[in-house]
Image (spheres, rainbow, N blue to C red):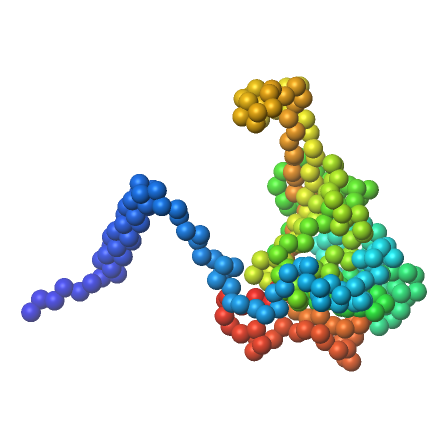
Length: 324
């Protein structure tokens, strides 16, 4: 008796037909929904389906604000001390790591880059405190790749350790024209989506690296440093934006806006001044951070007390569980 066997190509053809059928049904449902006038629902993401967390508190919580007023970083946020950073790296690093440290020292104000000279951190931290530094940043590499960033606030801590990935220097970003880091311009700091109590702790650790002017309102011509938290990954971006006037003398190919129509729509009449626009340019560098641990006090790998350590048994394997 002849039996027809399903070959690999035949199975692929069947899958393609089923996929095309499902796509056609989806388009038909969208047409019916648009024809009926129903409002489309909000798409589900891992953020919207996030597991409930008891540590998610509003930013104006009284107990949380009272606790932050008495923590180790309160003297920086009360403007009693201006941040002064010391940046170094591990021994025998590649030129790629040295270049990354140079770019990072130009991004963060009041940062001094010094070589390590085989000096252990236990001897480096007292010298940094003696010279009035408020934080120590250490960039480590493994197998010729940057893998760790240590942020240790002085003299009382805390110390945060981050795993570093996806490092892209300034020279490898697009739009290299008119690119440069203006060191004399104080950057505007944006810390986004730190929702839990631990997230607020990390937000204050990163925010204390920048002066008080960075945490204030942005300037008309300014740099912007962004720490964006998404699914416990902290994305670092560095932008430069300039406010310009929309006049015909620039010669650019931007779309022209009829000012009389805009004024009539707003009910204020035609405007006599040219409209403003903002030019945004990513300067770099670009990298991603992942929190590994928070240690009380300064860096001490042997006898230090840890406030939080990443453990898979505690966090779990669910993709909808986030700690920040």
